[in-house]
Structures are given as C-alpha cells and as structure tokens.
Length: 76
Image 1 (cartoon, rainbow, N blue to C red):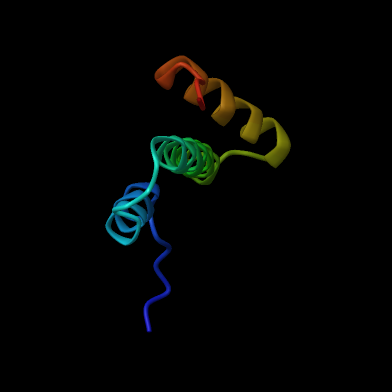
Image 2: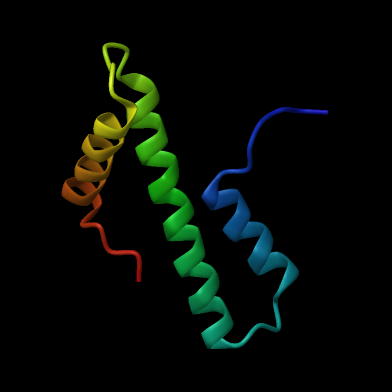
C-alpha cells in the first residue's frame, strides 16, 4: 500500500468520474473543495520547503501569503 496522498486534482477527477449525474451545484461544491485542498497543498509545500524556519506558524503565514499572491486567494 502506498503512503502517497491523493492530490486535489486526482480527488476532483475521481469525484467527477464517480458523480457523472451530479447537479451543477454539486459540481460547484466539489470544485470549491478541490480548490481548498489545492491551497492546503501549496501552503504545506511552502512550509516544508523553508528549511530555515524556526516558527512554523510564521512560515505557514508566509505560505498563505504566497498562495494569495500567486493564485489570488480565491477559493470560490
């Protein structure tokens, strides 16, 4: 068994395959969840990549700032 986590893209792809009869609103909700998952992936990667970090909360804040500047911070 693999220890790899499912990416937001893989999750969304699987959701659409499993929910082909979904309504527009259900699809919109799934997309919103996938975007939140993506943000968490980016922030965690930023935090993990900061080898000099001594304050994980501060590094997380920088990761959030990076995400918002790069992707607009729009989870809707």
